Image (tube, rainbow, N blue to C red; front, top):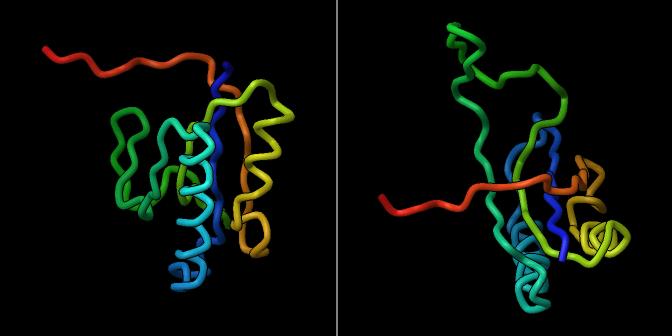
Length: 113
């Protein structure tokens, strides 16, 4: 089955999710786990430091109105099925961000050394 990364975007100025939004996000994640589609998911904090070449700067790499607030990797039979799962993400409904779906081209699993 193919893997897809769902990038979850949020308005940089919107602040933290409300308790209700956090609960809705958790329910959506639980649904993905229960369906067997979820591979991994991570909420991200705002960027403190970025690197570009030898330059180290404070803040995000790109100055944008929206920021990547989280990422989720799912398995789905095709892009249409991945879009259906992504469409259920409450972030799509809140009007302060949204999601982007990208096919995963490859990955590296951690290996004990």
